[in-house]
Image (cartoon, rainbow, N blue to C red):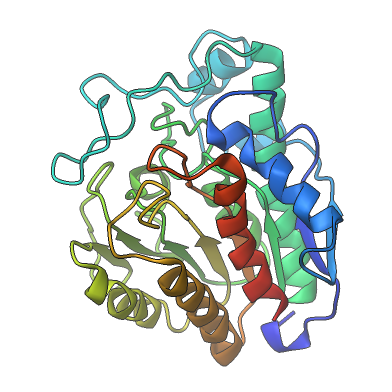
Length: 315
């Protein structure tokens, strides 16, 4: 199914399993966003509960030992590796020093990451049928083959790519989170069917391209060049048959990102991504990705930012 054949409603995947009480934004903001959708803040959107990701599916993207450690509660979910904990600093490429989500009940956390990972798989199936879809999933792109990192446990972007490749010959992953998607690169950059385009404002989890024709990565230092760099990234993806969009809002100056990246820039970015998919006539699926309160926004305001992605997809 191509983008141009899309029929309303826009089906977005979410269930109560995504949100786990209190804790990091990764496991809390989706509930607020879902409530906004139910209130009719964006018309013609239907929330659909996904099936949990299975152990067999996880083995396509992660090592058996790592999967078992997560499922058995033997590792901190979304843990940050040694030497990578500290205040967010673009120059040093660091993330937040807050604990991931370890104090919360491990069974609820495991169910949460299985749901958000499964949500990306089901959203991909929906986009293949109906042109576009999304999942209120966060905590994906830092997870690598054998470890979690940067509040990410299982890499639902990688699973979505492999799901799409059952029906198409090539997939692009556009990662516009504030931080680089080194986990996705670790899993997929050797796959010649996958193109990676990564535009960040922080060098945390940076990765080295190994194929110029399939890999693009740029860390933006000046807000005036941000949208132009996004355009270059999109151009590098021309020709793919399916697009996975990691729509991070932590690039926003008050959601953890770069001073000067305003709401207007975020809105323009979302519209450009959707217009690109329309022009290329390729199915597209989104994930929420990052968006945090540590630069002054409330959790509701962070959710409001993520609503811009949904609005663009409905347009």
